[in-house]
Image (cartoon, rainbow, N blue to C red; front, side):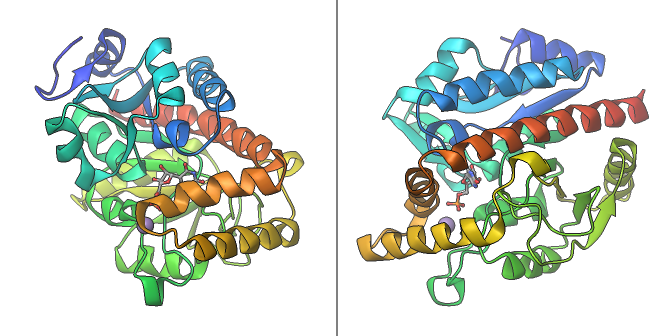
Length: 308
Ligand code: PSU
Ligand code: MN
C-alpha cells in the first residue's frame, strides 16, 4: 500500500499509475453492496474492472474497509462488499462516522468522487447518478451526489438518471449548481434503462477527446466541480420507457406504503425494480455499466494524453 495521501490506502498498482500518468478510472461500491443482488454484484464489479483494463486504464474501486478509505480493491474485498450485511451505505457526510468507527462503508457517487479526487483520479465510472427524487418539493429528498458534483473535480460517467428521480428537476438542480451535463453521442438526456427521457441534454460530445478537452477547459479556469458525462444504454439492452415507468411507479408506491425514506429510498427502489422485472432490469443495469466502463477508459486515456 502506498500513501500518496496520508489518510488513503492506495494499492501499489494504482499509486504507480498515478505517479506515471497512466490513466486511472475510479469505481464506486454502493452499487455493489446496495445496488444489486449477490452474486451478480460481485460478477459485475469484477467484469467492470476487466473492461477498464482492456480499455488501457487501471481500475480503482473505492470503499472504506475497517475504517480505512481504500483506493483499489482485491477480489476478497469485492466479495466482502458484495455479501456482508455490515457494510454501511456511505455518502460524504457518513465518511467520518464510518472511518472513526472503524467500519466498512460502500461509497456512493458523492463519497467516491471525494475520495477519488483526494487520490488524484479525475475520471469515475458508475451506473446511475443520484438526483432530485420525485416528490422532492415535499420530501426535500435530493441526493448529495448533486452537491458533490458542484464541489469536486471529477468527471462522472453514468447512464443518466432513472425515473425513480424527477429528471426535469435533476437537470434544473444541476444547472443551478453549475454542473455541466454532457451527453455522449446524443442530444437527449438518457434515462438509465432507456436511451430517451424526453429531456434535451444541455451539452453534447461525440468523442472522448472532446470530453477530455472539456474537462481541461473547466479545470484550467479554476472552476471547481465535476462534469456529468451521460452515456445512453446501448439500444439492444434498453427497456422501453413506458414499460419501465409503470414498474417504477409500482416500486415508488410500495416504498411509500412501507414508509421507507432517507438513505434507504434508493436501495429499496433498485431492489424492488429487480424483483418486479424478474431480473430484466438487472441485465440492463449490468449492460449499461459495462458500456460506461468502455467510455470511461477512453476518456481517462484522452485526458492523460492531454497532460503528457
Ligand atoms: N442509482 C443507480 N444505482 C445505484 C445508485 C444510484 O441506478 O447504485 C447509488 C449510487 O451509489 C448513488 C446512490 O450515489 O445510489 C445515491 O443514493 P441517494 O439517492 O440516497 O443519494
Ligand atoms: Mn436521498
